[in-house]
Image 1 (cartoon, rainbow, N blue to C red):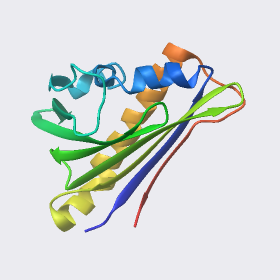
Image 2: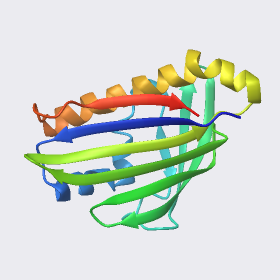
Image 3: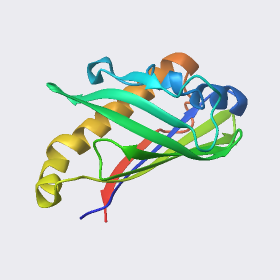
Length: 165
């Protein structure tokens, strides 16, 4: 089974504290997820983020299919990073690292997601047609929404790459 990685960097003219306050609030995930995904938080987002926190969502990754997605916040370093891992959901593996660091004129937000697709060779075949395309769309949407909320640093280009191992 192949391992895939999505790597995204975005820069915004805000403080690290403001970025952390927004990104570490699980309720804000709905704000930066496209409406067509039917994303709803079912439970676990009623407290500030902490290691061991379980958050349950309902999501429709494509039309006609809705699933539960359960993630655990496994690591948190206040103001710097947090990690969420899928415990139940559409992926065979989902390990998502979120980093925030100060840069000249603002903050850089970096996402590194390591994931595996279920269903063996069929999943590998479907990945470039559906999953990769959808993840690019979701992160492009996030970039647009975050830019609407916080503005954009013109000196630092945003980056999005997807690769497989």
